[in-house]
Each structure stands twice: as structure tokens, then as C-alpha cells.
Length: 471
Image (tube, rainbow, N blue to C red):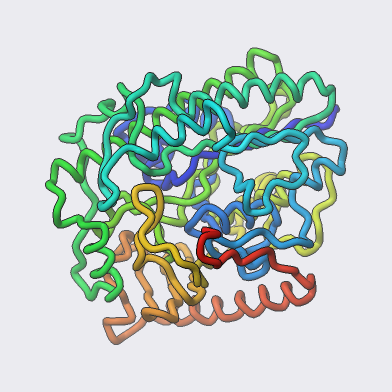
């Protein structure tokens, strides 16, 4: 059998609970739903970080932020860890990437062709059009972009991605393609009619108030996001528009998928869909993201569709905790490329075929922060100032509990079964379940293992990027 092709398609800032394949009934998404019907869905998938650069660096280096040392947006990937794209290129794969792949963060190595989301010309103009909309002082501004759907950034990126497919096909080499769409990343604006696709009156807002003690930093965050200035209609509208953005990007990803089908490439192509991290989208009264690993920011969708020529179970869901870092060994193994022995993830297909009846792991871990730069609030496209952390925040998450170690503002722990929105900090309640203490101890051991691996690999960190003007 010929070496298989791999196509990795991502949406940016799509939280798991907003994906229709994981329970969101406000919208339908033909691409996601079709892929899930023909593939394998991993409903308990988590990112290694809550923001773009660390999460993407983890997928492409196969190790966690504690190892590669990309812990906030301003860091660059390490200089001496091979990236997945380089390993594919060395194995005589044609490689190409488009969109939001952190070209300026040393994550651009190993690609024969690359098109950044801000490529000069139509893409840059479309991005500027999107980012120019909305209020700059609140986290919930939302509405319509002044352009037709075909002129929006995701549509233009789909156009470029389809051209990349044709180039890859002409190469007569097996190919590894990564198409990284920016939607539904804020600002929360989308071309009509997608801004009105969901009726705000149909939106049920998440719980925004705490019954227990709210961490002190969140009071400042609420003032920055200025939720108290928004009406119920404003809040429901931003959720509705976010859902419209999801449908918009799904339609564009579907165009790419159909281009593969029309060229008879699905016969021998693995197609993988995921997101890099989530979004508050009203949870805790907040919007956007921050440098604290909550469920809504780390839980993401993941679907793997096998090639048509492979015998495989299709339309199935595999429960159990999955780490996006698992994509590194999974992709390499699918292509028959040796996996570096230091990779921290697991081959998902090996698990599915040989042992899906057993949990892959007891907990997933994430790290973010250690930010010492000069940015404050970056609305409408980024995070709020109080959501940044000068210290590194680490978190462990089992299927029942979460534990967040925040040296700057104090630790948090939550009962995910009783309190899935992580509103009631167990550490403020006195008596702490033994399982929480166990998770805390497991987090300690995980951190030490990561630091040992960093030393063994002699990781040379990239530029930390904290000079005024650099950001």
C-alpha cells in the first residue's frame, strides 16, 4: 500500500462544548458531523495550554510547555527540537501549511510551502477588516463584518489551501498538509448571514456567578471584560455570533474536504480535525481566554477520519483522556516515520486498535504563563490583563477533578462531576477529597518528569521576546 497522506485541519479557539459533535445543538456543522460519521471522535481531548503558541508548539514538538519552554504567546519554539513538519519532510513527504501556524514563533520549519494568515494581499486585508470591527474596551463585542462570505478570511484561506492541495498532488509525493483556520478566534465578527444564523433568544447563557469563593483575580477580570455593562441581549448575541463563526469556518473547512474528495485523494488520506484551545464564551462571566487552565479553555474537539481504502470502525466515539500532544506520535506512526523516544504523547490509533477498552491515562496536564512582557489588555483579539501570569501556572485534570497550581493568585481545585463549570473552589471549603490531594501529588511528579526530560534533551529555548516594541 502506498504511503498515506495526512491532512490536519484546525479551527482556532473552538471549545469542545461549542462543537455540535460534542453536544452543541444551536448549530449544525456539515464538515465536523460528516467527519465524525466517517471517523473516530475522541470526546475527552485536552490541549497542553490555553493559548495558541504553547499549544501548537506542543503538537509539533511532541512535548509539553515545561519541556519546550514555550509557555506564553511571546515565546519562540526551541532551537534544537525537531518539529513534526521537519520529520515528514525528511521522510520524503511534501509538506505545506496555511493560516495560523505561528510563523513568527519559529514554528515555520520543515514546510515546502507556507502561507501565513497575514500573507500580504487579500489575506492580510481580510484579517485587518475582521480585527478592525468591534469595541476595543469590552470582551463581548460582536456582530457582522462588512464583506460577503467569500471575501472573509476563512474563505480566502480555503481558496489558498485548495491551491496547496493541487500543488501537493502535482508533486507526486505523499503529502502532509496543515490548514489552520483563524475562526472562531475573536474578535467575534463574521460575514453575514452568519452573524444572524443563531437567534440570541435561543441561547442559554452559562452560569456566570459563583456560589463559592471566586478567585480574587477574577473580580479584576470581570471589571476588565466589563460584563456588568452588557445587557442579557448583548451576552446572548455574542454567544450566537460565536456559533455563527463556527458554522462559517466549518463551511470553509468543508470546501477543503470536498476538494480532496473531488480529486480522489480521500482514498489514501487521513483527515484529522481539532482545535488548539477553547474560549470562556461567558463562563464565569468572562470572554476570550487567559493563562489559567480551566475546562472551557483546555477541552477541545478531535476527530480522526481513516482513508477510504482502510478497513476501520467508523462513526465511533472513544472515551478516555486524550492529550493533543498525542498527535505527534500518531501522525508519525500513520506515515511509518520513526517516533522520537522522548515524545510524551501516545499513538492514538495503536490505543484504539489494541486497547481502547483501557484508559489511555489517568490525568492530562497543561502549563501556561511565565509572562514578563509589556502587553496589557489585547481586546478585541486577545486576553485581558489580569488573565496574564508572571509565574508559570500548571494544572492536572482527571475525569473527576481538576487541580490548578497558580503561584501568583493561589491554587484552585474543582469537582468536575458536581461542578463542571469550575465555580466552587474546593480549597476554600476546608475538607478536600483524597482524590484531589492525589491529583496534586501526581502534578508534582509530572512536573519533575518534564524538567528531567528538558535537561536530558538539553533544550535550547527560543527567543523569550519581552522587549518593549518587540511585542
